[in-house]
Amino acid sequence: MEYEGILLGMGNPLLDISAVVDQDFLNKYDIKPNNAILAEEKHLPMYDELASKNNVEYIAGGATQNSIRVAQWMLPFPGATSYMGSIGKDKFGEKMKKNAKDAGVNVHYYEDEAPTGTCAVCVLDGERSLVANLSAANCYKVDHLKRPENWALVEKAKFYYIAGFFLTVSPESIQLVAEHAAANNKIFSMNLSAPFICEFFRDPQEKALPYMDFVFGNETEARTFSKVHGWETDNVEEIALKISEWPKASETHKRITVITQGADPVVVAADGKVKLFPVIPLPKEKLVDTNGAGDAFVGGFLSQLVQGKPVEDCVRAGCYASNVIIQRSGCTYPDKPDFA
Image (cartoon, rainbow, N blue to C red; front, side):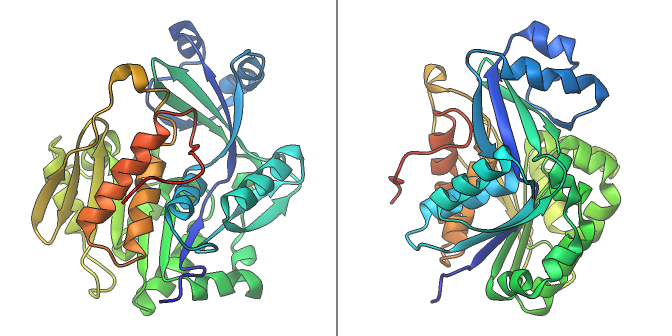
């Protein structure tokens, strides 16, 4: 099998500005723990305040880009992954390019006049809360995707992954890729990504859902999805099953829903059945931060999926990758994976 460019991701490339904060900081900027939101006016001074902290770190991030980097790290084949998104023509943009190159991901960035997007990562007791200032990431246009050299990446790939966050930027691009996947029996996957996506971007999310062969998410996002759709259940297993039974554009592949629950078992719903997979336990003192944990899970999962491995192996790889990432700051990893 030819692995070059087999997996393509599209999303919002953001530079994470990560620092340990206290509860007063969260209160000051009205930030809830373990959440992800888009920056409003009131949040803008926070970026400078974070940058001035002595423990601040700058890490190339963005949900989809994290997952694709982790998948490439876990794959024994160079050049197996590609990624598209929009960055600025600035030093943060240059940092992003270097990071992607080092990770071995084939990136085709659209470069915009706006500054490269940033994501404030506020870490308290190991839990992260994200506030994204999309900036250039918000400027991705479907015309970039349609350029022959970029559409060639779509045609070459057999698996696609797009975080739900990209629904706020270019639903048109998502739809193009989703329809291509369905027409060519390829695998299209997305992530619920955040409660606000399920609440305020319900229409584009519902438009893309019939094309999704895999739906990823965490327990909070799943419960929000259930509430938005009036399902009147908080039971994550039931919700995962209902999402898997949502009508599909193509019946070639049955939809599989994969919901992570932090330290609790991973819920996998498919074909009318639910399976639970325990995660790797981690003593609290080894937890550095949860930033990138969900992204890493997806990256690990996809690294096995593209190799034709069964779902059990995909989940095991996802749990391995997230276990590695939560013991480090941000979505970073050692030189080589130790996964068999």
